[in-house]
Length: 507
Image 1: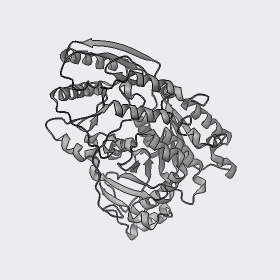
Image 2: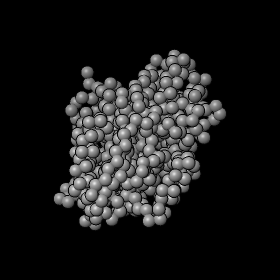
Image 3: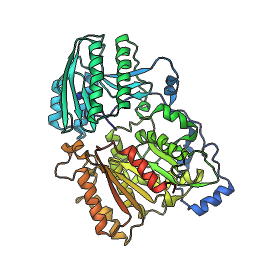
Image 4: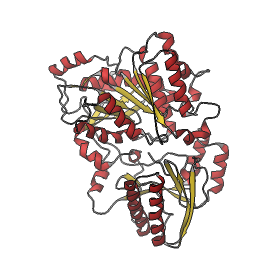
């Protein structure tokens, strides 16, 4: 997906806060109680041993989709609702200091940013229009319609922007800088329309995306000038979840939201289960599980529509996110589960989550899959290479998306030499490999995080070396797809469509 940040926030994740979830306390989703007929179906589909403790079982909470919340109401509202989080000097100083300490920012980049900050700095962050993220130019704080000037940056396949001042600390090599100065908002609006059109011509966005961004720009800036923009709620990270609210409304009756606590990780996970159209509780279905639910839940509607149109077989879609007290977009949070405590996270999925879901639904594990991207791709690689150590075998397919083997969050948690380079000893323990691997990346993504590679492989080099090692071990069930013209994220929706058509497509 395209990411557009102010220069101040080029290195950081969106941080927004919203209202708490509510869910009824139940053990099994409504309408999915296990009958004798289903038990028989499960016997033919396979069995998993549930290793949840009594406390963990007692803390399971199942309810309807709560993510829409106020977003659902705003969709039917005549006037668009604009939410902006304004970050002051103290907020930004704390943010960038934390990023320097965790290795996200270099010392040089950190000092450059601090020098550019002023005591009265106020930066717009996490802008939403009717629950939809606005990724275009942000208005200045308390803007009332005067002069607008700045520098725009257009990069191939990815767009980043700054609404004032010089451009710095923006990743990317193939980029065009456009400096502008407008006397008032009317002149800026005309310039912005041309700017969006130029990005369509350059291929960095579609005409539909350009039209939507321009319309959202008019709404956001007008609301700031009128003083009617709202501040997001500050109780938790609910509003960080990225999805198309209108598309989600169409499938909400097929979605269950399940809260599951894990003792070993001391974490509550938010699981979204999307049942296929015309779901039949007596039937057995494959289950496709995605990590990073904060982003991947947003991919459910498009795949659900494929099933509705009978282009692919019916599949139960599952995304694993964190409850709203954790920011799932924060790499420091993701690293806990994908890197530091990946063994416990894999235990949770294999011995808690999947067995529990198999008590709720009849699952064909021989066609079920697990997907992860970036740090999540690192985790999926770990998961398949350690799958032989578990009695439970819930997955046949493993998708390793753009694995960030170079990540400063990942490498410190590896042995010396890194254990991932020997597939965590899988081939020392086994003579054969019976899982199906789909390894993927974007053709142009190596430039995205070039500053972090050092002496390590880039993303694409890491993929290439992984495929070479698998070939050396005579693995014939692994394939690799590098998506033309894509960066680190942009290919994901197309990849899902292609994977489902290939592995679940109707002949």
